[in-house]
Image (cartoon, rainbow, N blue to C red; front, side):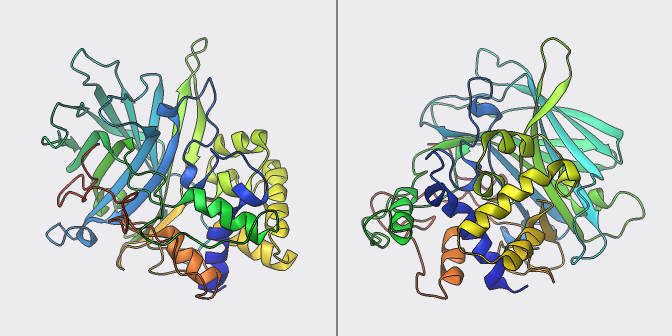
Length: 398
């Protein structure tokens, strides 16, 4: 399967919001997917980023990787938001023997974060527990960085000792790095579907970035690759996904309510809300199970509705299920830097990767090259703050 086939999936997944009349809050990168009165925004995932730190900072160690989990979408400027003290926020990692292997979705290493209630100064204490092969190997405590009067003040970076390794953690508000002219995209897709006037994307000086000015609650982790290898493993390829689980107040048990890996997969191809909730509640190793067959069938029907043949839809499904973010740590990081034999991306995701432009260009064979929104901005209604040059890399909060 070639890059063109896979990128067609990426953009088609986002396009469902228009073609299938999904509510507007169900858009790319899981922003606000499934928000309900019982699942507020602080237990709602937005994006996952996974990259070699040296590809973001040439002065970083060769062995270090960075994981970023963003939550609490649409956090407005100059307002403090908190992590839930009734939830677990987790990164899950599988070691992969070969970059072409089908993901097992079997967890080898887990990083589990739990937060206390906020103090009067807005700070929260967190506990990081690390498990390897379902056995606890260590824990450490740290503190979040609350919003200060000067949002550009130095963040609290917690250097935690787990086993013989140091894991660095930042937790707190940062600017949302995602960028996309969502509003105009709906118009473009409506025109392409024949349910509205045919229009193109707005010029750069008129394009509007959907997330400009918003913050997210971010958990940023710097972790040595050797720590993920655990023991005698020489793995250099890893599958990563993130989840949030909430505690049942009656039983004390935790139930998974959110899951995310690649952008625009679950919330893009799955239309029925109960199916979306079911997908969010299972691990990747259940994506291909008999129990998940109805969810896969709906995803395929969505692909068929977009004009794919049955054969091509099956190829696409095979490329992104199980849903994980694969990173080959022997090559430069970047969402479209490399794909494996199945056409799945295998180089993680960097903060400035333009998922929208990359997929638009390939899907249309170069006819449409951009939504005219970039991270740094080409017009007055777009443009994010500069990324900071050192860990945690995300821009200061608005």
